[in-house]
Length: 235
Length: 365
Image 1 (tube, rainbow over the protein chains, first blue to last red):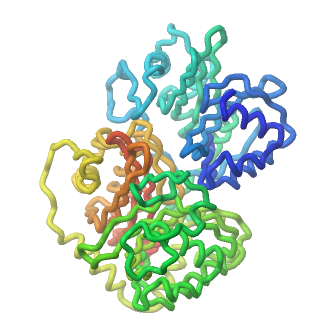
Image 2 (image 1 turned 45 degrees about the vertical axis):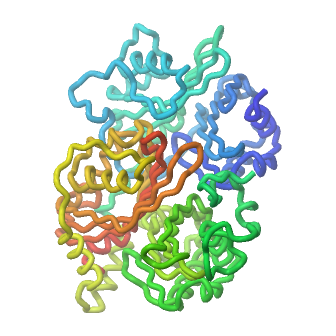
Image 3 (image 1 turned 90 degrees about the vertical axis):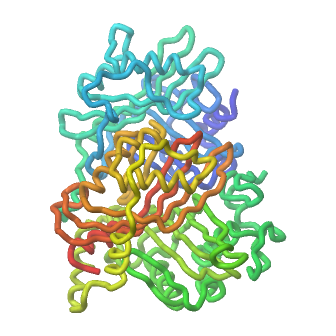
C-alpha cells in the first residue's frame, strides 16, 4: 500500500492530525470549483466530511481511487509532493450533492488554441514530463474525445458532456502509471446551452480486468451553469 | 531535510513552516550589516515578515526599513518608515489574524548596482485573514478571505530601502462582498473632491513608458529559459505583449499551464492564457509595457522560478475587461512569478491592483 493510500485510509477514519506531517503548510487543494490554500483549509474540508465512510479501491502511488460506502460515490485524488510532503492535491469527485457557486469572471480566450477551422490534430498537446507510459492512452482518449471518434468507445460521462457542450475540449494534464493501471488527469471546457462556459477537472482510470472509471464533478457541472458573472463595468 | 532548491540558499520549497521559522544558524550568504540572527536574504524576508505581521512586532519595522523608504504602489509612492508602520497597523486593525504564507522568494544579487550585500527579494505571499475591522475597501464584514500579495524589496544592511508592493485588492473586495468598481468609484470621488490635478508621479511614469524606444520585429525562437532566464522573460513580454503576438503563448507555456491573476482569476492552457493577453490589449489598445526588474532562482528538480516586475501604460479604449471604454490614461504596476519546467511555463501568478486601475478609469489618481 502506498503512503497516499495509507494516509487516505487513515483520514477517512478521522485521523486528521496526520495532515500536520503529510502536507506542507503551503499545500493547496484544487477541484472543479475552487482552489483552497493552506494545510488548515484542507483540514477544514476533511472535518466537513466527518461521518462519511469510504475505502481506497485503486492505488497508483500518488493517485488513489476511493469509493463511498454506498458505492455510487467516487473520488480520485491526485497529489504532487515536495521533499515527501504533499504540496498540491487535485480532488475529483462526483459528489452526489448540490452545491452553490460564487460569481465568476466572464470566460476569456478560446478553447482550441490557434486551431481556427482545422479539425482536432491527430495527437494531443501534452505538458512537459507527461509520463511516457501513458502517452498512448492519452493519444487514444484525445482521438476519441476531442476527435469525436465515438466508435473507439467513449465513456457515457464524456458523451454526455459533448452532447451538452458541442465544443467541449479536453486537455490532458497529467498521468500516473503503476503496474498495468493508468490514470489520466484531464480538464474539459465547453460552452453549455445555458450560456456559460463550464470548466471541469476529470479523472480517468484504466485497470486490467476492470471497467474504466471516469469521474466528473456533476455537482460542479450543474453549479457552474447557474453561476453569475462578475461585471466590472456595472457595479 | 532541507531542500536546497536555490543552490546554497534554502528557499520555501521542501521546508515546513517550523523549519522555515527556526533560527537558521550562521550566515550562508554575504549579508554585511544584517542582524546576526539572519542567515541569508530568504531567511531575512520570511522571518521578519513573520515577526512583524504574525507576531505583531510592528515596531520592528524601525530596524528593518530605511527611514527614507519609498514604497511604490499602484496608488502612488509612499514615503518614510512612519508611513509603513501606520499602514501595517491599519491593515492589522482590519485583518488582525492575518497569516502570511510565503509561497516563493525569488531573489537577485543587486551588489553591482547598490553595493555589496544588496539584494532584491520578490516575495509572493498568500494571506488568509478575517475582516474584523474597517478597511480601505469598506466596513468590516466578518468574512474570512484569502488573497495574494507580492512584495519586491530592495534590501541592504538589514534595511528594506525601497519596496514595490502589489496586492490583489479586487479579489479581496469580491470576497468581502464589495464590487471592485464601486470601491474604485468611491476612491476616485475622494480624489476628485481634493480638487487637485491628476497625480504627477503617474503622469511621469506613463510618459516615460510611452517614450521608451520600441523593439523591432523578430521571429527568433524564444531564448532558453534555463540558459538565460532574463532574456527568456524579456522576450516573452516583448513578443506577446509589445508585439501582440498572442499565439506565441503556445511556444512558451505548457498546454496545461495554470495561470492566476488579478481578481482571483484562474485560467488554464494556451487558449485562455492567450485570451488574457488579448483582453488586456483589447482593453488598452495602445498599451506599452516596460520591465522594471527580473530575478530568478532554481526551484528544485530542474525547475526555475522567474519574477518579473513590470509596468504598463495605455488608454482605456476598449471594453475587453473593464466595461465600457472611458478614454482615460491608465497605469499598471504588476509583478509576475512564473515556474518554468523544461523550457515551458507551467505555473504563473500575476498580481496587480484592479481597484486602483478602475479608480483611474473613474477619473481618480
